[in-house]
Image 1 (cartoon, one colour):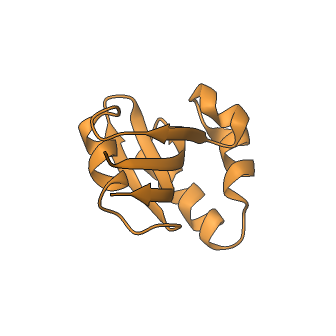
Image 2: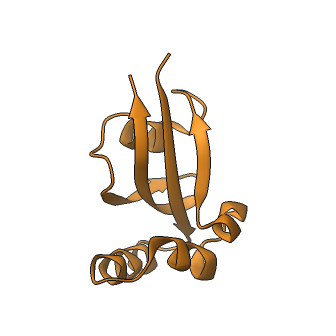
Length: 93
């Protein structure tokens, strides 16, 4: 069965998400950005979500994690929880 590991940052607005993405692309550490900005409890752990299988996350999140490029910051990805930046750290098909 497929598995992936990822980390994310969850914020309320698309604008905040885009701003953080730009800062990360310009050198801000993803884990530091998650600790300081994410509204998800995983933020305290650098946004790390650990390992999960398809279907364990909401559809929009799942679609990115199981099709997107590894080690790249994806987003903004809108879900019922807000706007996410997602970095897929590994995936096994």
